[in-house]
Image 1 (tube, rainbow, N blue to C red):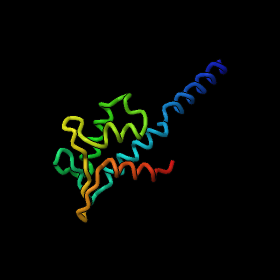
Image 2: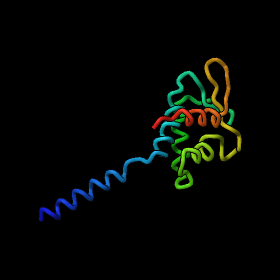
Image 3: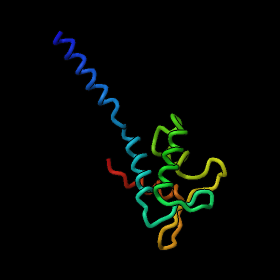
Image 4: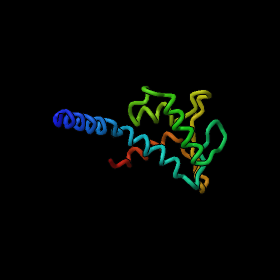
Length: 116
C-alpha cells in the first residue's frame, strides 16, 4: 500500500512539473506584460487608440483563438501581436513623447531583452 501511495505521489509531482509553463509560454506572457505595463502609451489597433490593459486583454484573446498555431514567441508576434487579422492594418504604439513604433518592432525588441 505504501508503495502504491508513493508511486501516486511521484506521478502527481511529475504532472505538476509537466503543467509548469514552458519557456515559450513565459516569453509570450512577458511580451503581453510589456504591453500591459505601458502606462504612458497608447496601443493603436485599426486606427483606434486603446489603453495598455485593453490592449493586453485583446492580445490574450487573440492568443487563445490562435490556439496551437502559436507555439513560440515568434509565432505570437507574427500571428497575434503585429496587426489586425481582420483589416491587415499593423498595430502601433504611440508613446507619451509622440513617437510611434509598430507593435511588431516593439515586441521584437522586448523579446531580444527577455532573460529567462
